[in-house]
Amino acid sequence: MRCFEDNALARQRLESPGEGRVLVVDGGGSMRCALVGDRLAALGRDNGWAGIVVNGCVRDSVALDEVGFGVKALGTNPRPSGNLGAGEVDVAVTFGEATFATGAQLHADEDGVIVCRAAANLLTDSGCNTTRGGLGPPSRRAGFSSTPSWDQVP
Image (tube, rainbow, N blue to C red; front, top):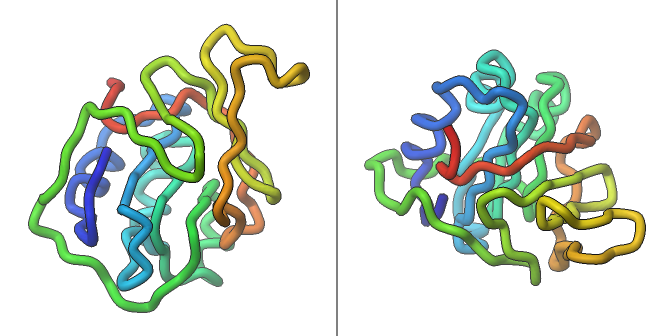
């Protein structure tokens, strides 16, 4: 999913059953507003999503940690995003020197995110890319693994 400073598409997706998947949102690296806060994270958790990776900002960082939902982002910003529904779905996205594409596996912990092709070997680094550019905490409960979704699934 690609949405610049607008979180309506992310909300729509998190309202659907997650089935243990990770939502990947390319917010264009914007640091001017937050695409996800504690309410969207709780919505994702309650609908069975494993976590969310945001190429942009989140807000409510203390509350996010208490939600118990995997969150990776570039940073925090208290300003909310727009919610007009602007953006693209069903697209592969590239940020942090990693491409998030249909069928890939995503592994995340407190140190960052690794994206692997479905048949890749995480231990040998064959077919895997580590994101660069700051996709670390804001949530200390950030460990999760799943197949990412940017509207590739369901």
